[in-house]
Length: 123
Image (cartoon, rainbow, N blue to C red; front, side):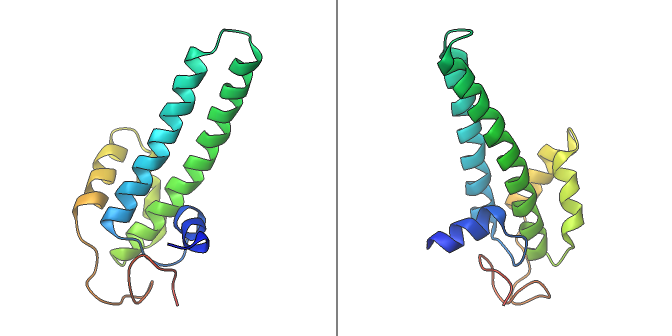
């Protein structure tokens, strides 16, 4: 995978993404958030390290929210659905069910209005 494809995966809104790519990218974001939170809890209270890890966590949190929306939109595109339904990923309790559904159910076989193939921006 090239650098441009990684950027598209986490920040692009066009095209489609497969179940595996959606799941793995989502887990990577969750692991990175958990790691920065873990490091923040280990840092002595009021120390410079504590401030750096807190800032790192919040920066990563906002990047992850944006990336989660981008991933959700592209995964919905794989079903031939509009990306606005990605809002369901931010409704408590519904978000867990929506994430699991997007990881389990296959998308459209073949081309649809959002692209000819999965894991690529729309041509």
